[in-house]
Every structure is written in structure tokens, then in C-alpha cells.
Image (cartoon, rainbow, N blue to C red):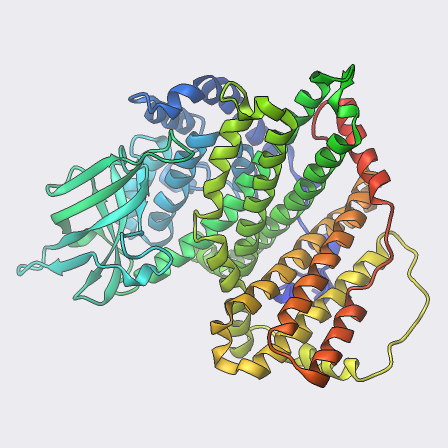
Length: 593
């Protein structure tokens, strides 16, 4: 297989080009996957939406019954292999289900916690006995799961947990003591994926039935949003856990915690993207119905700008989400072809694309926050009323920037993982960075501008990558091992990388679609042009801010010239383009891209 025709390694998009034909895009979704999406959306429309108020009031038994109904449809077991009574669907299909769950509010939180961080640790790290015992019941909904990592003094710093596990004298069980905080599904879960330190330092995973003596759940948290999601503190007071309930190896719990979070971050990005698509529908519907000054508010330029920008960011988010899904899906297949089990392949694939998953968690959650904020604004005063859907959407969206590691932590992780992979030789950042240093000292070449479909934009993406490598290379030389202390610089760099990955994803989707043709190709192309130019402006600003934080004198001047050279692109009439994008949705009364 030629270099251009195979998927890049995780993080390699920073230095290399991607062949559009290798990318998974919405237009590649199969009929079977569409059916799964329709099943999920139909379930939400008929079972969840009519009960949203009761869900928010935590009507006894309601979430439990909905989870069981989702189990009957196969939605809880879609990722569970058939040998454990699940559907055994591909990662791409599970992505489609996650996107379809995007507007299910508190139920979606319970669903994601159960099917993701509640079930996957057993699927990936459980013994065969544990898998046979728990997975069929988790897939059916007979058992509900929760994931217990956070403690009162350890959130993002998970390894500083204080919960202890002491082996009994007869060696038959561990005795656990400690407290967990903010546990989703904590009020009704039957089993807990819990982490504790054996012998005071060996961070280890355990499966704990909640009917264990000494276990107690606190009161429900009174939260700003996702009010229907059960969120409680959990207390372990001399809870006896049989040794056969140790999950994975003693002292290796951090592998479980972090690798499962990689998948959780990606899926959160998928769910938020699906939510954004739904709420654009709501916004367009309202704008078409609401009249002011004698005409629909959708006819006003200010509203069109909002609708178009919501659509552009969501279009980019969906392209980026499925691109990432395809990378993980293909890696799983590749590793299984090499003889690895599904669980082993899934763990390795999730780790390989942990950088992209963190990007999607950040980007998806911030796109949804933008969409629901504008949804409230388009509704005006009605947007502030709980009688309309905008208020709940706004409240429930905010948690996504905190879930699965805050967006700030994930921004720091992106650069940390890139640098570590470079140091280990997994990807080559040094070579390209050195080449750019030489390029900066040379006279720029002025050839003819490319004229093919989005060729100029693809060229601009390649140039923007040089800007990131230029700054990263200079910053590493300046700070060496202490770069981690320069969090502001790291976050500027991550935001540049996020803009590159997402803009490139939209371009790749459009270029692949162009090979087969679509009625929306003209709109895809225009959305790419607007988004990329806005992204380049942000990249330029973030780059200049990063450079100013560490460079001086001649180095400062040289790097600033580099930023100007690498982020240059002629403008387009973004006002006219946004009007066209909005008009198409207004005409069809929904998100159509």
C-alpha cells in the first residue's frame, strides 16, 4: 500500500497530507448504519423527548425503564461482541449511534456512562469469566453501570486518589475505603468500575456490586444542567471485594482509566456534534415561524449570519468526527488482521488516536455550546423560558466542556502527547521543524496559484502546519523539558492544531464527495472557504501570541514574518456565502448539510 493511500498514525496529520479517499465521511454511511441511526432517533423521539420534564425531575424508575428499552433495541450492546450477547457492531456504527444520541439530554448522559466508561473497561480488560458474567446483562440493560474515578481531592489529577484497597489476611478479598464524587448513574447503578490504591500506591481497577455491605450512595447533586442524570457521591466503608473482581492487573489501573477515557472523549465529540445538528433544526424552525416587523426573522441578515455560522461549524465538526471514527475503525481492523483480539485492537487503536479524540472532545463541546447559545439568542426572550427547548439545551450543553477531562486538560494533553511521541520516534516532528527553520531563511517562491477544486485551500493548510511546527520547534528549543510549565503557549499551539485538523477534515470530506458528486458540493466548497479563512485568522493570532511569549529581537521578527507567510490567503465574500448557506436551510426548514 502506498504512503498516500494508507491512514496516518495518530498525530501525524500535523506533518503529513491525507488522501481524501482514505477518510470516512457522512456520505460513506451504509444503509445498515442509517437504519441504526433511524432506530436511535425514533427511540429518542418517541420514548425520551415526551418524558424530558419527568426525566429532569428524576421520576423514580424512569431512566431505568428507558435504559432497559434501549437494551431491547440493541443500543446498549452495540459495541459488545456477539459472543457476549451484544450486536458486535463496528466502531463506525457505534459512532453513528452516539451522534444520534446527541439531543437526548440527561438520558444521553446515563446512556453514555453505561455503554462507554461503565461497560468498556470490562470488555477491554476483564477476564473471560468477568466478561461472561457481566457483559450480557450490561448489553440487555438488566445491569446498569457507573464509573468511579473522581474523588473530592482528585479530579483531573486522577492518580492522586486516596481510596485504598487492602488484601485480607486469607487472600480472598480486598477491603476498600474511600469516597468518590460526581458519579454519573451513581443513584441506580448495579455495578461500579472503581479505582483504588493497593498497598498505598498501586492504582488498580475493581468491579464492585452496589449491594455490597458497606457501600452507600449520597444524595443527588443539585446541578445547573443535566438534572435528570443521577449524580452522587459514593462512600466505601470497609467494602469487601472478591479478588476475582480485580479488573486488569494490580497497579495497572491507570491504563484502564486513561484508555477508556480516550474512547469516551471521542464519543462525547460525536454526541455533541449530533446535538448541534439537531438544534440547528430547532433554530431554523423557530426563525421561520417567528415574525417581527411584519416578516419572518429568518429573512434578516443578522439571523442568517447566525444560522450559517452554526451550520458551518457543525459541518466541520461532523467531518472531523467521522474522520476520527474512520481512523480508529480502520486501525481496529488492521490490528485484528494481525491476530489481535477485538479488545486488544480496540485498546491500541484508541491509544493511537488519543490526540484526535481529545481534539474532537474539545471541538465538539465548544461547537455545541456555540450552537445552543445562538439558539437561545434567536429565540430572544422565549429562549430564556423553560417552556421552549432552547433553555434546556443551553443548560445541558455546558457540562460537556468539563466531562471526560476539562477542555483545558485536553488542550494540554494534545501537545504533551505530540512531544512524547516525537521523542519516542513514533512520529517525526523534528525533521519537518528543522526544514521549516531553513525555509524561513530562504526567499519565498512565488509560483502560479493552484486553480483546481480547493487546491489553494489545501495548500494553505500545508502552510498552516508549517506555522505550528515553526513555533513548536522554537518553543521546545527555548524551554526544553520545562515546556509543560508554559501552559498558555501550549494552549495557543493546541488551538492552532485544532483549527488545522478541523479545517482539513472539512476539505477532505468535500474533495472526496467531489469524486462522486452531490447536490450540496457547491455549498460544501463555500463552507470550507469561509471556515478556513476564519481559522487562518485564529491561527495567526494564536501563533503571534505564542511567539510573543518567548521570542525576542531578531528571533521575534523572523518568527513573526513566518506567521505572516504561513497564514496568508486571499479573502472571499463571506457575507454572501453565509446568506446562501442560511437560505438553503431556511428554504428546507432544517439543517441540510
